[in-house]
Image (cartoon, rainbow, N blue to C red; front, side, top):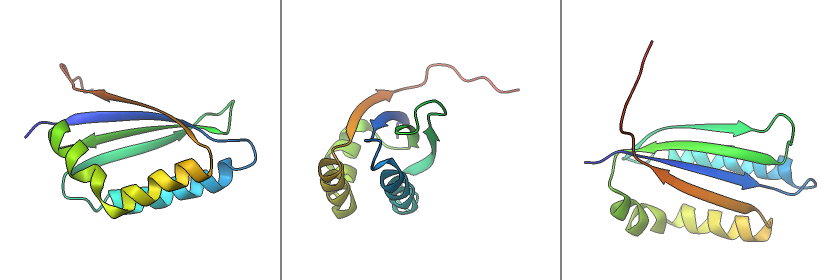
Length: 102
């Protein structure tokens, strides 16, 4: 099975970023229970509080992720929340080619 990294930049509005921040953390309580999930880190921009960056690692091929994992009910609810809060999203998918550790 392949491993990939999903990196997503989210931009909320100044008046709803706290609500979005809580919803994002709640989402990953559910995501972290998924079978092929490895780990994730959620970052908040120090200089622009309404900007978030999520780094997720999954042990599955991207086709399965797109066609099965992203069709789960919690994902569909999340998609509606993004629309309701007018959240901008910029996703990118990466595959590692080298690893380094100290």
